[in-house]
Length: 271
Figure (cartoon, rainbow, N blue to C red):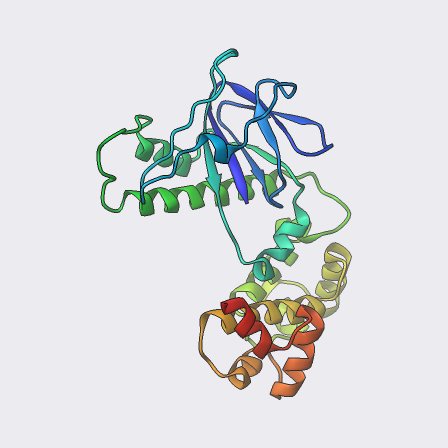
């Protein structure tokens, strides 16, 4: 995921045939699906690839780049972020190709700008720990931008964004996300969120477009996929945490969802 944070001025961002998006001072524009794009003051000017104008960076050092000079000056920070798609898929499926978010007043943004100092050294060695601090602040800025985008969306018929903004379904999703291994029942979730079993089941299906346990099963498989990558736990133990009585049943469900068995997923993704 790439993003551009505009510090001063304004620019146009063009992504494929989607037209141009105007981004101004204080805006963060994210491209969650990583589409190739142009950014500048005039889309008719021949573009220059970023790799052709950026010099190799020393570890922990910023990479200042200058381009153009014939238009009004614009200053921005480019941000990149990565995520595990098998965990972030519900979010990625619910956001457009270009997300523009006004970030005025965001504490993480102010801290990031302060950490940059807006004076880029040409010779001093990078401060110890500065790169890690900037990375953390940049992550918080991206998270805050996505939060603002989600909460600002107008209600639609159904979907994940609508679900997390709903009083009851949002609470149920938080419980399922936070404790996927819990032996949930619709009745148990209903007691936690303040609805009857039937009312929660109907409301969840209407808003999310699928039953609670279809969502829970998929989320447990996504968490299991992450555990396969980040731990050395036996597949049998991961299967049990995902709610399966046997490793073979878990393997069959995992293969249907990810198109490869757990053991192959673990080996190929680690490589």
